[in-house]
Length: 103
Image 1 (cartoon, rainbow, N blue to C red):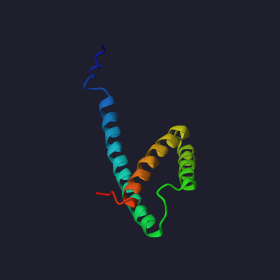
Image 2: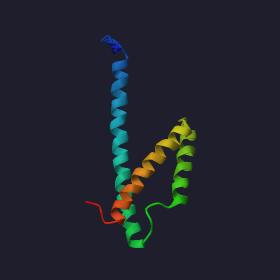
Image 3: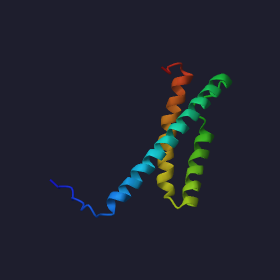
Image 4: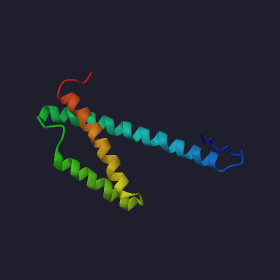
């Protein structure tokens, strides 16, 4: 059984962790905004009788994630994996609306 190290009060890790935590707040806000846009997409798809999953769009978004990651100096493999997980979640979110199960 390991014990966590105790950081001295002078450790720069405290400030770094605070910056990471602040960034996490911003990331969650951006994901919440994306979720709202997905709700709008679901309403459009409902009116226009489109499916939640449009394979060509899924692949386009995945490749955009890779390209954006490469341009931003981020691991493109990780970006693609993260976006594919998000897309599955958001497709399910749209499906609930399209199937009338959005409570």
